[in-house]
Image (tube, rainbow, N blue to C red; front, side):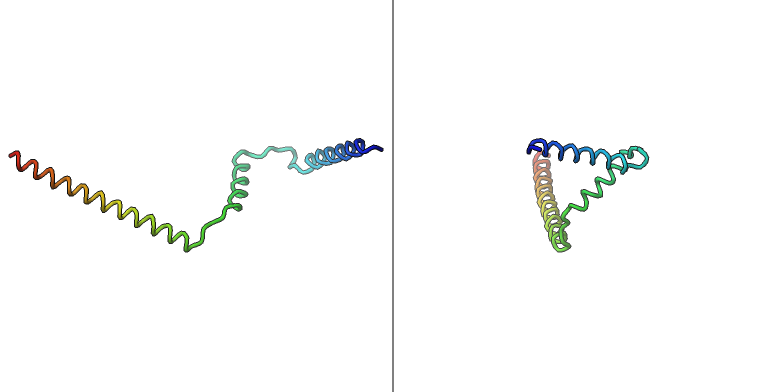
Length: 94
């Protein structure tokens, strides 16, 4: 047998084995629900996630909350300044 014939014979054996095994492996030919398929894929993907450590989560949360407080104080100061400016303008006109 030549090299090409051996390769073709191997390819035929591999494809015939996969077809036979796929026919045997299913549950009486029933299709899986899209929801069940989605949930199985979701579980598989969640196993691949690298979750951050507790210290990293606490650190990131502290940074975000500090930034929010700082932004709130800046907006408050800006609003207070504009309010006082408007009171001055109204009092000068009256």
